[in-house]
Length: 283
Image (tube, rainbow, N blue to C red; front, side):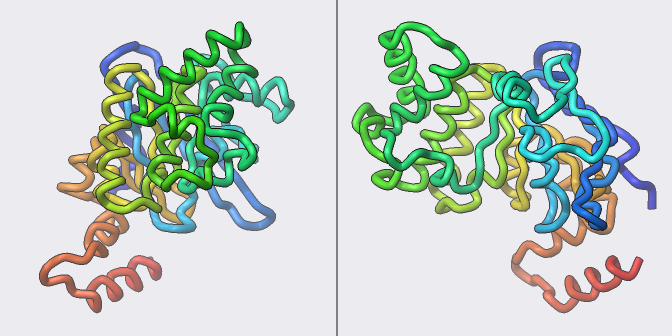
């Protein structure tokens, strides 16, 4: 079987000719364990790339390295034409201006003592200093952009629903106008109806702002909706890549087929899926 990781490594968008994000031979080791092994891909302006895999596949570690939350053992990340280097406060701040990350449960990333509006204003104060009045006006625009009311802005994180907190996290990330948004299982903890609302919102924001997404998820239905291209990771390596719809309609790698076969459906054969997984693990 040909390893599909050798071809089609660019996620294309509608604007720009140079990648906004380039990842080259990324490796991350924790002691003797290699969590990410020789991962490379590119993301164009306005494009959306899915990183797909089960728990332990290396997808979240990859996302955290893009956001500067983990330092690569080797390899490079180039963001908006500039190599990402170092873990100094200055380096992290420079990276944060260009790339923001949203987590599965944003509750822990909000200060419980601050209102949502104050939390949204904080990155603006750090990265785009200016008059408080202008900052307050920008916060109002951001709340409106993600469908939150002024009343929600005056609330504290514990007073909002999960979907509202996720909208607030998106507003906070968008405030400093990053080039790339990394979303790590960003809708996994939400009810299906709220998932749909957030995905529609993200799609609309991509169209109106030209931001690029890296969408880390185990959920193939979500990846199908929100991404143009995808890479499939297993045991730290990319085993397949290409247009999302092509991967989901005609998977080439046994692991990708196993992921699709693992989704419950009429006539679902759990024993066959288990046999296929054992055979893949032995190969």
